[in-house]
Length: 221
Length: 37
Length: 230
Image (tube, rainbow over all chains, first blue to last red; front, side, top):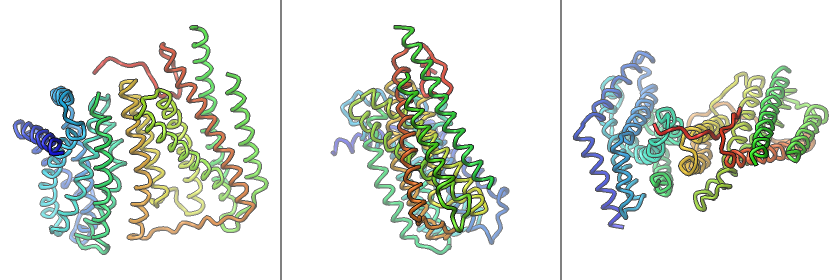
């Protein structure tokens, strides 16, 4: 057990340091997210009345698309495939390797959120509070696990840019539904925040378990 | 009502078309298989 | 070969019998009038589609555990038939919705999760086409088949939950008088038989495709020749 944790930690660290060295993905995602907000403003004609109604939708749209870009890129590199194969030759279990990659992917997504949430509050004038951040972070766990699994799958397939959203988005829908509701309530709408977050946690548990079980079929060659 | 008619016509076209195409593919594949043996 | 033609003939005949019942025996609905007759095939197709995807689930699990080629073929066959049946369900559903609710589409739980179902298994078929044929395609598709099947009830539940937060249009209850129930059950049985025949034919096609090495032009197919690595 501790060995698996050590493996996962090592893999996550490796992924994050290689991203830190090149520093190409996170700034690009940050820019993408801000641009998405700018476009939303023109597309929706945001004013002080409708901001809290539209903002949750904009948040999830921007996050989902940034997530797809992030996951698509994270597995794409050639050296990524080679190092993955090398890792699989070691006695480390595929689930542990997958956990490491998913953690790194989750942190990438959180980096996007760190730009998105303040920018959203700033540009749309919506509330920025602990409930909002908590809901988004909780949803990130499950979304990262799913995104990571399908990105790994799609990395070795043709037309992955088309296939990744097609496979991942249907599975992200429950997170967007519950997360959307939680964010709406955090921003002032009526409804049950606790129910929404409880659902998110349930989804997290379910999909983390399922993706861990599926990992060895996807990573193995 | 036109919706009723269109609904069943479309259903027949989709299901019938799929059956017809599948039988055709099966025929062709079977011919190939027996031709090669 | 003729065995399959006979099966198709039997299935078509049964569907014609069901059709006769739907149009000439079933009573007209008091509230919804004629368009209500769409319901018989629309719901039967939906149930047959779910049955197909349950087969995909079972075959996918079997494949991951045993790497049985037959399980993979069955999954391929059932997925394609399931997508065709879901298409019928969605189209008939939209044509049913328009006269009854006034619009072709609403985002209620059933419609939404059926659409998601269609998208997931269309993705399954696309993945099979694009992935390297053989073990990789089979494994990945099996994972998608399993996740997809799990996801649909969750989406249905999420949307239902969401709807209780934001009440939407009320769906008419499904209580059926005995004559209608009879026609529905007959239609459903005939449709399930038709679905089984379609899966059997596709299964045979998949078997022959696996065994015959030369490229075959298929108008509706899931396999193609492996292309050189990108």
